[in-house]
Every structure is written in structure tokens, then in C-alpha cells.
Length: 400
Image (cartoon, rainbow, N blue to C red):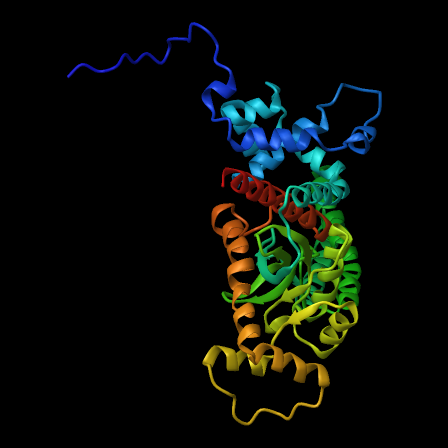
């Protein structure tokens, strides 16, 4: 059977434009279009006139967002894709920023990412997405870029302090017994290293006691041991508010072990970003407390959050026997609202609204573990993930 001609070394007679290879509906063109409309003057002003001419912020933002949309978050992998991938090369305009440039860009402009998220969200809402009739709130645990084995505890630090004291006495004895002609420089250097570590331990003990934690990571001191379905993980709590059409309208990363204190800040963040409060908010029992019910009633937001008793009732389909008597008026109204056919039907939409978002980010885009360290840095990383996710929602919406 005759085959088509195949010659990897054969160059095209005429160079092809990216639009001749990729579909006009490709994601890279949407990212290019959206970012062209952004006001990046503050990003540009962050650079001085001295030194080598830097890459334009627009270039690096497009590369980052396209990478995050594909689940490519490592700066080294982004560097590789810019050299090898047609879509990345188009967004980079043929430039080849290295991984250090990409890392430095994110570090330099971390605070501006939040403003960019809001600006793009406004653009999506102007296009008809991000409707605030019904929103759903949820949280998940994401592992930190830190080892569970490199953890400090008060007991461990005390034991290490005792070991270092014994080592100091041993090295001091060796120095005294050594002949000056034996060149004791190596022994003296080791003695100084042990003394330096011994001097650091009291400060670490003090920091550990002030934090109120029983154990703390040495690699990422902001990370926390948090309960998840897989047991305790060393990481962060990722929280999001998602509109009924699947757009993330509120995002943040915290160290919180529970969600009760997060509901009001998340709803207020939606108002700050979108200029209005949602009409109805859905969340699971982890977000319930009487104060949250009162706060949402004051703001005019219709809240659908079951307490743990009602959550068990909704799951089992029957009343829970032996439950404590209800005294709080807000809880009574909440139970009545969620027990009504309309309220139960609306609350059933919560999982379909918010959980697919976390599923996509974790399973398809690698949000099982953060790449950066520190609470501020992981907030920037998650905001970039959310921004890229919203752009893919706009992409899908345009395709119908």
C-alpha cells in the first residue's frame, strides 16, 4: 500500500501562521483577546528604567494563564513548553523567558494578581457569565510544598537542644586536646556550626509556643496539619464561591481547620469583587453557625446551610431521633426553609455547582499540591488557577 510522504527534515515551502494550524476558537486566542483588554500600567510601572529590558508583563501573564489552564504550573515546565509548544510560542511572541524570569515575575506582581482576577471577572459578567442569583460555597484541603517529616515539636526541639549541648562539650574537648600543629580548623568550624544551631533552638521554641501549635513545618511554616478525607494532611484550606453557571466569583486560601468563620468573609469578597451580594447562598454543614445565619439575614442574603442534625436528616431522608431542642430562631427558619420541597430542591444543586470545580482543578490541573510556599504565595498561586479556570469557562461558553 502506498503511504503519504514522510520526511521530518523537510521544511515547509512557506511558513505557516499559528491561526492556520490552530482553530480560530482555540483557547490561546481567547487568552490573548482577554489580556489585550486589561489595564497593565501598574504592572509596567513596577520596573525601573535601568538594567536589561524586561519581558512585557502581558507576555508573561498570557504564558502563565495558558499554562495554568492546561495544568502546567511549574516554571521549568513552562520554560520548556514555551520553547516547544505552538500555543505557548504564539503567546510569547517567539520570546523564550526562562524559569527564573517566570518565578521572579510571579513574586514581583503577586499582589496585582488579585486585582487582575477582579478585572477579568467584571469582563466575564459583562459578557453574561458569573450570575449571582445562586452561588455555592465549598472548601477543600490542598497539600503544601513541604515534607511531613521536617516538622518541629516542643519535645523534639528540647531533645535536639540536649543533643547539641552534648556535641558542643565534645567538640570543645577535642579542640583543647588537639595540638596546634594538627590544623584544628575543621574541628573549630564544626564547633561553630553546632553552636550556631544551638543558638537558634530557643528562638524556634518561642515561635512554636506563640503559634499555639503542637507541631509546625520547618519547610513551610505557614502550612498546617488539617483533617481531610485521607486523614491529616500538611497543607492549606482552599475556599471558593462559584456562581450557578460555574464561574468562580470568590477565592482564597486560609489556614483554618473549620469553615464556620469563612462564610461571611467569602460572601463579602463576592460583594467587593462584583459590586453586589448574591441573592441565595448554598453551603454544606461545615459552614453553619448561628452567627452566620444572623449575618446573612442582616445582609439580605437567603442562606441555605444545614446544621449537622439537619444535614444528617437530608442525607438519611428521615428525622433524627433524640436531637436537642431548637432555641435559636434563625436555626428554626433555616430548618423550615431546607425542609420545604423548594428549599430541598434548591439545596440539591449545591454539589452540582461547586464540587465539579474542585474536581476539575484537582484531577485535571494538578491542584493536589501547591508549588509555592507561604500563605501569601499559595494565595497567588490559587488565584492564578481560578483566573485560568474562569477563562476556560468563558471559552466553553463561547463555543456553546
